[in-house]
Amino acid sequence: MRIIFMTEGWYPTVGGVVWAIDNVARVLKTRGHNVSIIAESADRNSPSEESLDGIAVRRVWYLMPTTAISPTPVAVLRFFAYLFGSPLVFLATMFRLARIVRSERPQIVNVHYLGRNAFYAVILRRLLSFKLVLNVCGYDLDRYAGSSRIVKFYIRAVLRNADLVLSYTEDQLRSAESISSGVRLKSAAVGQGVDLQEFNDSTPYVHTSPYILAISNFLYRKGVDLLLTAFALVRRDHMDLDLILVGEGEERIRLEALARQLGISDNVVFFGRTNRSDVGSLLKGCEFLVLPSRSEAFGMVLIEAMLVGKTAVATRVGGIPEVLGDGERGLLVDPESAESLARGILRLLDDSQLRTRLSNEVAQWVSQEYPWPAVAERYLKGYERALEGGT
Image 1 (tube, rainbow, N blue to C red):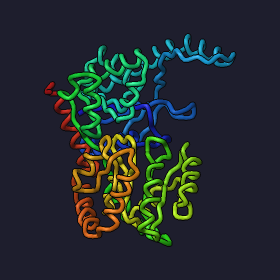
Image 2: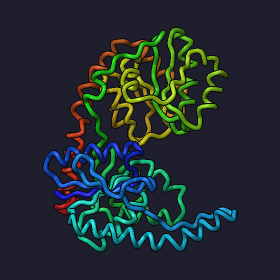
Image 3: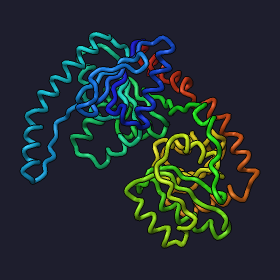
Image 4: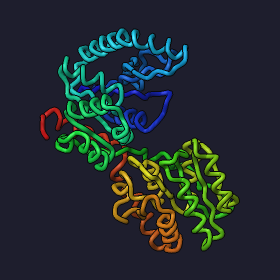
């Protein structure tokens, strides 16, 4: 197959979308497919063209019109410069994209994340011959309810024009279907992948006390405040237990104040951001992982915990139930409930046989479902389905 991935994010910025495209593209190339990438220009220093282990990467400006304006002289000048300059940049970008697509003659153009790149891809599809595959990632759909009429129209139009819609989970596909009926007839959940050997060399983190672990950005939707409240309840029965929080974010000051208010600050470690090797060590050394999210598209950290044989307590939101199953690989608790979260944590702490059984299940399951070759194979099946015109 001849495949082009279109993405806004790319290196040096690293995130789930970039990681997925990088790994799937590498697997597809090793299997003999012709793969290239069109990404957003990160800054003026980013090369317009480069190679990633033999995979061509081209950068463009996905400029979009805007009506946003602030009442300051500089902002007004920028607005009018943008207003009159964006059509020229748009035409230049479309010309370059059309030239790339005509040259490579892709059968599949796979747009990752429903952003500005999708706008250009839909127009290209009208002009040139290829199948348009759209990956939705959860948060791109979450913004729909609070968007303007123009943005809502745009999101529906992209979903309607896609020949195939892919996502990490079935939950995301249900969200897409609620926005544009008919999506479920042309969709598939492909999951997110993991490097099975990534944490092989990591040694368990040595801490002064047994600890449970949470890894996330400190954002309201991540529910770390609920975890702190739940941990205060858990500490009544497990005075020797600590909580390690890995991450940073806008909620950190409020979370530190909450820990002091709850009287648990001496037993809560704000670890900050860390490298991948330390993540593996922390996961190997913990009793289990806790994911208290108010909303969660997939929960990649659950897969990473499973990779080292650790189970989890997590809220029943988004794609988390699909990852943990119905108590098969971890415990699901009610969202927005510190009491339910505390009960789940206590159950795993007090039932060593349950914790062992779940831990034994997860490592085998993740090695079957989420290595990158298995994920790439699901992409290929989706592409074949789109090319056949099946629903």
